[in-house]
Image (cartoon, rainbow, N blue to C red; front, side, top):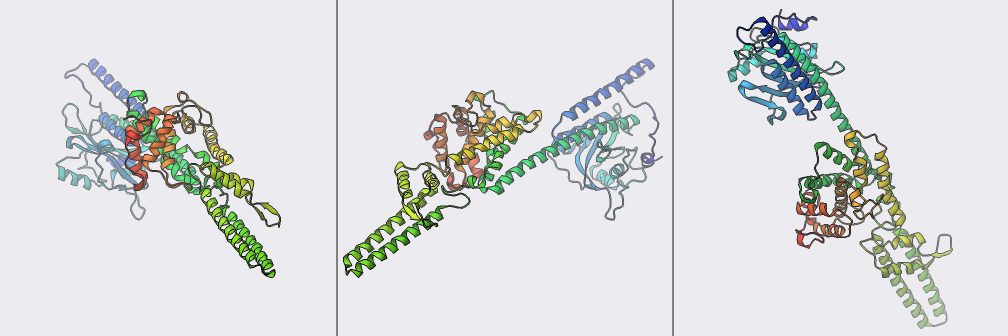
Length: 572
């Protein structure tokens, strides 16, 4: 019976003899039995150890490589290939041949140059001539004693390989890998079983086949679990990206922030991880890094609840539209009324033959128009917002607010409403106290949203990391007023990243992006007044985290020369 006929049979072949195992020459039957038992138990222990290792491995490439190497060790194979089913093709993932020192795929760093093996031809007919495709299509193990005498399979590619290398591909053991639903996810193929004593190539025994099938079953479960976890992680991160995209679509001024802060957070966290000194105890595993990455991506998810007109408030009078245009219209009304008053005055003066009074009326009108134009330009400047508004400017706004005009109802009214006066007198920036509270609420919304999620054990700190980036070291931050010692290093890292990104961001509606020296100067003062973590700030500057970030995200004109000796609070 050929290997193909054997694979197509529904019955496993009977054992053809005792498998090779180490034993002393001339051993007695009792010694032979004990050696066989030891040999059998050692393989079971190895199989169990591999099962444990496979269940713990997170990296897909390492997992695939572990599967193939373990199968080779169990069956004494000189070489092997592990295929993964991608679509309708078996894709080469790992290739090993010890005697030829061939190592491709996996952790080797060498790509596999072979084309995938199709399971069907272009007409949809099953590929029954390629041994790996046959095993996958029929869900059957194929055990070939000698590829050069075996009928029913196409080994032309194997023979061409042998001609080029001088190799002799003889025995093949090809095992389909099935997931928990019985679906084929890959194929494990072993080549040239080797006798441990004579080192000669032999056929794969029934024990080899059963061990390989057992390993393939364990490996398929481990691989499926890892792929499922990976898919869930990709799905989860995609959902996070969906939230950030929604924020981005809602406001182009915050979407970039949601993407840049996680990057800067990881840069500073890695620098802190490598640092000694005060942060020598801070170390991150791969799980810690992933947890911080997720926290960074979600740190502003609460902004999805923030009204657009507050997030996008580029000027002090902006709501759905910029109300400065309405103020401009009122100035035109004042100028029109002044002109009407001037014309009436001239008419009366000329009627009384008083040219001097007519001239004074015209001069008063021109002076008033000039004042109105100056006041309008002044309010336009104040509407833009800035770092700090002078008290005398605030007083002038209030003075203009008390002008009177005839509104649409024909009634005398304040030139500026109380709300308009309050907004134009915002000391810094464009947000009034109520709007600032609305903006600040995003962190409360973020914490509520994140704490409501059933986080797995390795992500339980995400709400704390993400929810702490507006706290201060001196307890004057929000929303909880935490002190430095009450916060994790990760949350303190994110606080610096959030501030530095905001300072340098060039997509804000109310300000241009600051230069490196300006931003570091502000951060340095924040260190001095207890706003940010002093040790992390020193690492941020000393390890030039700011420069690596700048080269990736800032415009060239923002990357000016930084004299670190001049940064407040920093000592090189």
